[in-house]
Length: 482
Image (cartoon, rainbow, N blue to C red; front, side, top):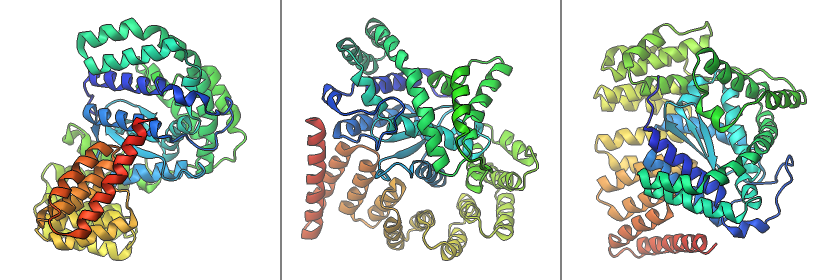
């Protein structure tokens, strides 16, 4: 079972999400909005919605444990990109995040952020089921539900939103009192729209799911599974069903719409099966229990069984049984040379065992096979930094950034490499780009100010830093005035 975080933290993040959804500002009320049930051409990405989304994500990072594992992040982003690919002209609008948490949940906030919880992935039985949740959250953003909520708002609700924001910022008893005094009526009104918005997100989500090549039946299968599980075990509904209410009518409507789509078969998919195994292996509080789970995997599916071998190796490495972990992974690399998970994990196990240079061999062999996989460049650069070869690591990271220039992981690695080389200005520049990609332009600007102080006599460096600072200042000013 995954660990649960402090319930007050979850409450505060939930309240802030509500504030963002309700309090988008009066300026957007005049926007032309789609009718309920009509698919919007694209999400609204105004400076204001991006600012609100960034503010929420900044607060969420203080309250929740965001996963930084490159393998898992690459999977979540790839899945999200596939699901959102049919949204016209917005390939770079969405950002997909993973939170380590014991709840079954997912949510979307203005600015294109979609957050999945690790336990949600563990509770899905196919990639199609997971993709159905992602599609539903993307649909909320595609349909501009935050803006449409505001368009139906009254002055009473806007003042209530301000009160709820105070509640979040104050916290404790004062915050609870403020929330109780101001929010009940506003929340009651908002719930009247929630069923309509859920219906619309179901409709658009099914379209996104089918367009991405998944079985639309996966959507209702997963919701039914959650409902049955909580009912049979006598537990309260999982968080996802509380925030996405499930009714008999809603299920019937989804089933009716599903008939319009061709039936396809959802397999586990190698990436899905290995992501589930990796989450359990790395984050299960009791690694011995995880080892027992992987030693006797449920079901006879070949892919599930080899993903279990992968998970077992990761757990053995975590427990310090490095020889056993290396033996399992070397055999997997030999048996399945076309699966990228295994050389990556083999390198990780060498690092965990303290054999840093041994980790380079599987990574370089894999890079020869997959020359366009930035995750391999990043993994090799990480090892090179650890053994003091920062100059070579820097070259590797630069090559990886040409393949993926939106990677927070790569920019943080670049900052480490430059710092190890004593190049403080480029190190702070790289940290600035990581902060910007995490939705924190103000922090990025502060990092650039540090970089500027270390630019020395390099005209080129000083000019590039100054130009980037001007762009960020303009962005921050534009958001502040909308």
